[in-house]
Image (cartoon, rainbow, N blue to C red; front, side, top):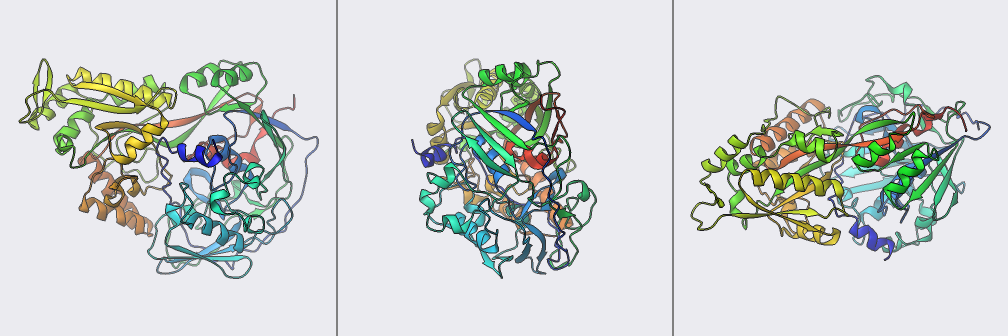
Length: 583
């Protein structure tokens, strides 16, 4: 199977590229570029991380496995990068400005950034990368978010984005890792996943590939890669990591210190990423003391690995929402009434499912936003409490009739049988376990439920064509509160990301307001309105948000957890990680 084929199959659990984020306008001409400090600590310190899986295509646009995405995070850079608490810091860009109408973003790029081969990173590279994402032949997850945006190089180190409509979360799109035009200009986007470059890329990030085979990949730290200091950006200065919104047309100095910084004693010089074919072998290696950290495990494997003496668990709040999707298309009128949807949600014991399927490693969900999100508004959310008696009353209110043989729909002659779609246990063990729990709880209510478990390809196919009654889905959301891909009517078409098929003009207006509003206060009002509408109308049956669990030995120091949209986000502060010793 080619890398592109594996990439296509990787969409099995819906990976929604929902973009947006912290936005404050900054004047790109007022932040001086400091002189970098170059230092290489000696002796070299090697950190050993175990991962389950192998790289397939180490490229920002074609990464298909978690290992791919982890490596991309270490080898490539975007204009901006993640800061603490879901905020943003300059990276290849050192400052930016937003036009008064919110349609033009201008970034002033660093002049000291270099590709591994010594060539400068320029605005032309940014324009080239965006062009690949916009190519009609590109079939990856990032293409949709870049349509309708024009990228222009205004000189070698200034890039300008022109939007057709304001996007409240546009700045978060500029975390897109950049590719080198001088190396890939002759490579067609359809050949990128299987190219020599994607097998052994040449990046501009803080680490470079020193050695790679089927068992591991060794990365070495680049001493002179300039970056923004996380510790210098703890305030609420516009343009800094503390910023949380945008005022189009404002002119503000950047407020963060950028420059190449010397590694402190014990900082990680080498990352040895070791590949495993199974969780069991990875856990055994960690328990034997051969690894410093281990991630990407099921909750049961996390607990097993953490039994090693001195081991701990770093928990990263992850925007991974497990939810039951009800098919609300015209072909399924049984879910058309609010009381039916409310009753089915009331029959689900979310807290118990969180404890059994995820061993408590996450948070209960009452809507599309996690309660740890800065945009979450508890006053706007109407939570549905678990209650089998309330659930039964809701179904009765909808005209359903309960008998010993099950529930019968109005005017129907036989009990209603519902099929619950789920990936099989091998494909996604957590999603499968949640589906088992939901099916059992609906049966406790008296419903006739059959669990329909399928492989990755069939699961994706059934979701995209709407061939299901109800389905358990793991939505991989972004940190921005724009959830329009989940619920916009325009996304209800076949292969769209609105899996429920719900079409609602009033909701469309609310979702569009979130997407197009830049002012922080006005945008929060729009977000709260969406939360209220979705929860009161029960347009989805949310269950829980998962955490990402990173098992660490007592040798590792300096790791700070952060809110992340993908497990690769754990590297947001990797340059600050340290090892207690090199033993």
